[in-house]
Structure formats: structure tokens, C-alpha cells
Image (tube, rainbow, N blue to C red; front, top):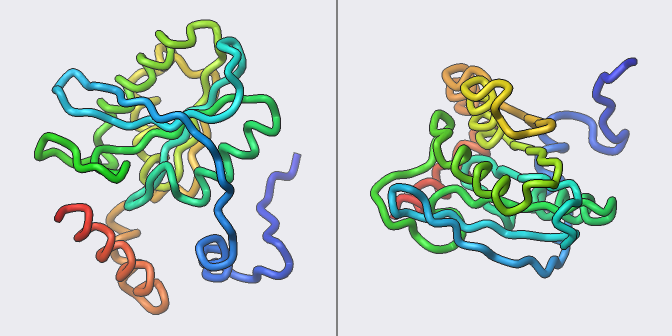
Length: 197
């Protein structure tokens, strides 16, 4: 089977494909249910549920990327598409990304998989009969892959997808400072400074 990526003919090139989403798409209006998950260290994560209420329906955990949130267009779009297939989804907001600052002086990063482990354990306890899957975008994909490597067959996931993962963070950091990519670097820096403040 040939799985080579074929972009839309009207989006030729990586930059147009990257920018189209944020500049041209309208976010879907989803009525989601927010759940606050209290962590072992007394901090919290906010989870946004959407779709099927049947506790045995397949459930997909969606992990956003750096400076994103459960309100990112790609997260909302995936949750909408999953609901149309009869699947439930829950979008995790990493620490401090739900619109409310977290309580501890600790941030999320691509090497911190403990919060993901606690979230997956929570979802398994809430819906023990539902097949559980995960999709991670960019940094969320890094965290997901790290978790899978650590947990192996005990991951409690039936499947996982990592999208646009920066495998070599050092090379990505170097590349984002060159040419047109500086636009993305400026965006990330603005968002990260706001997050830290």
C-alpha cells in the first residue's frame, strides 16, 4: 500500500499547508464538557469531552502541540470528525494551557510523560470497556511516543498516532531560525512568553 502524502493541489508547499489552517479555516462550534483532573502532585489538567456518551464507544485522547490547547483548530476539527464517525474524544490541555494558570511552578514539555500517564489511567478507570486510542500533534506527539516507549504493552492504548513530531529537537530549533520559518519562531516566542507570564 502506498501511503505517500499527497497535499491538496491548491496548497503547494509546506508553508501554505501550515498557514492555511490558522488563516482560512473557521473553528467548528462544539459544545464540549470540561472535566478537571486533579493530579497526584495537587496540580490539575483540564479535559474537554465531545461526542458519543456511550461508555463502550471508542474513545480518542487528543494531545495538542506547543503553545496550543484544546481550542486549537486541528484539535476541534479532529473531535468533530471523530463524533461524525460515532466515536467519543477527549482533548487534554497541558498544564496552564486551558485558559487558567496551573498551580505549581511546573510547565509541560516534550519529555514530561507523567501527566499523560495519569490521564490515561483516569480514562481507563472512567471507561474501562471502551477501546482507547491517542493522537498527539507536534509536542503532544513527542510526549505520546515517549510514553509508549516507557510503557510498552502496558500503555492501555489500542492504537496511537503521532502527527508532525519534531524527533530531533536540536535540528528543529536550528531550522526554525532560518528564512520564512522565523515567522513561526516569532509566533512560538510570543505565545511562550504569554504562557510563562
